[in-house]
Amino acid sequence: MSLDRPYQVALIGGGLAGLSLSISLAQKGYRVLVLEKEQYPFHRVCGEYISMESHPYLERLGLRLEGLPRIRKLLVSAPDGYRLIHPLEPGGFGISRFTLDALLAERARAAGVDLLTGVKVTGTHFRGEVFELQTTVGTMEARVAIGCFGKRSNLDVQMRRPFVQRGSRKLDNFLAVKYHIRTDLPVDQIALHNFRDGYCGVSAVENGLYCLCYLTTAANLEKGGGSIKSLEENVLYQNPHLKELFTQADFVWERPETIAQVSFAPKSAVEQHLLMTGDAAGLISPLCGNGMSMAFRSGLLAEEALVPFLENRYERQEMENRYHRAWSVQFSTRLRTGRLIQSMFGKPWTTKLLLKVLAPFPILTREIIRKTHGNAF
Ligand SMILES: Cc1cc2nc3c(=O)[nH]c(=O)nc-3n(C[C@H](O)[C@H](O)[C@H](O)COP(=O)(O)OP(=O)(O)OC[C@H]3O[C@@H](n4cnc5c(N)ncnc54)[C@H](O)[C@@H]3O)c2cc1C
Image (cartoon, rainbow, N blue to C red; front, side):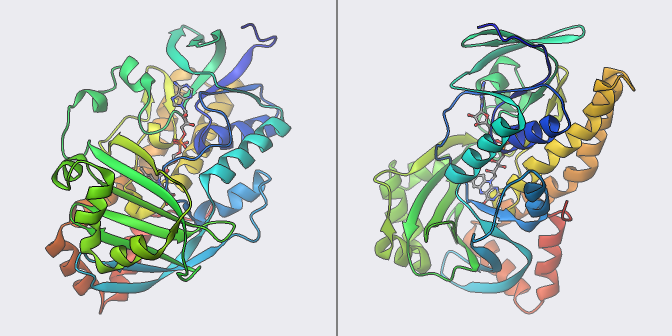
């Protein structure tokens, strides 16, 4: 396939990081290409709770977010049902990925981005001053290429990134399952229900629906009976709140969305001259509820590093160094805290102990939330 213009920036992956960054760059007049292997709209596994830190940015990109559920309370339950409710400041809002990604794709096209869907990138080669991208429809070129391809992609394998070579370790082998349900839970509350070796988030999205999404170890699936249904009945139902939800809610889809091999292992923010954004640079534990805001913010950091390079104000190496530094300053502590929290939740006694310790000290809960979130941008 031949495209009639040379691109300054090519974004591999049209999820949150790729689409938001493409809009922002196109709004500044840059020639931008996004390559996305799927077709919008489509469902993805995600808890669909967005922390308020990225609300102003999304509005600047031209998204209208009125009328969506605003979430201001957090309920956490231990595997035996013991629970804690805490105000969530500044909280977040709920929107399905089906709607959000399609809205961003529409905005990207309106801003002048060349957004090619159903096109998979199969290889990247840096040839001195230009990137050559092999895709399922031919080769494309751009001066800068950004990796926005999410938590695990064919490109991670192709690039032999260390986290895919580690084998199945503790941080590397999680399974996630998502449903949309109808239920009568409070619209302004996100619930995190723990069960043995996993947790399940439930919060409102648009059109009166709720997203129910859980994460557990691949080993738990085996221990729970080998199928999703038996895992739910044998393990998740041990938490009385989950049993009630699963047996009383109306499940909208026949089958859930699922993903496997989810990894929280550290990654690098720059690899083989690609600036990595969003989950391609590092995935925070979904317990922290702000991977989406981190995806948007990492796109902004990439933009701040690459615009002076596109304007020939510094060399490529300087762009890469600046992005790497900015990314580490912004996210390293959050990711470490996320890994620590993740390691405590889901184990019956540590979860309950933690909740019992936190209950009389709301300031501690506030501090944990603060440590895993950033300021509004
Ligand atoms: C179980 C679970 C629950 C979560 N819940 C929440 C939550 O409630 N709140 C929150 O803020 N975050 C949550 N997250 C995290 C959040 O989903 C991610 O951080 C966010 O989606 C990252 O966006 P991204 O743009 O990096 O990747 P994605 O949105 O995954 O986009 C990557 C895109 O790249 C495309 N792609 C991949 N490879 C190629 C290729 N070779 N060629 C072309 N296209 C390609 C994919 O099709 C995809 O569209 C959750 C994560 C998990 C695992």
